Image 1 (cartoon, rainbow, N blue to C red):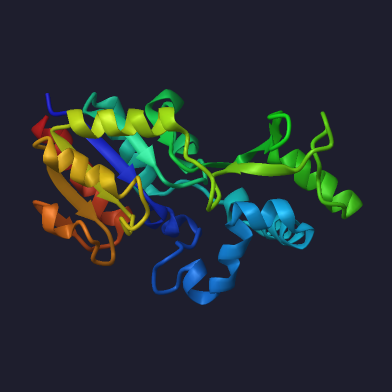
Image 2 (image 1 turned 180 degrees about the horizontal axis):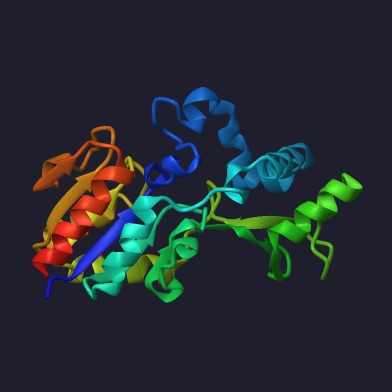
Length: 241
């Protein structure tokens, strides 16, 4: 049976109403200044940046987004027994909401639904922190120690979780087929997973609206709308076994 490892990026969620980052109409394409809000050192050192970050979280379309056909097709792939691991750069939890088994999903960049205190490590729910922010208009702090609270999203300047990265690399190395979906393949170490898989002998399929730096490693490239293209591909893979 074919072993398939999947990597997803922001492009898989655009049909759910969540804009990507680097596409023609991406968040940072339209407003490059927003990147500073995700800079860890700026977030920690500047209360104004922290306030802006929490204000943006209040407006985040992720709170009301629903999974689309592409997310659901990966649930079908998992249930077929072909999916070895689903690695995602996304922080929107839409794979979980679609029905993917949490233990089969590696969130390389964390998620926006959980919070963590940078002082004591206490964890909580972002929704509760946002409710406190809306009520008091004070930047939410850790309820345990009063320390700086952030969402469990890996910011620029933060280290990725080593265990998650290692698990993703092992799955890429062991896969017969590696599929990169909706990702610009410009952010490392996620981008390097294509090279890891190809170097170990896997076939590579890239499904993305724009060209990527890894296109030369792919045996198949699909440029159509992901919510239409991916379900067709999944049906094809399941039929082939």
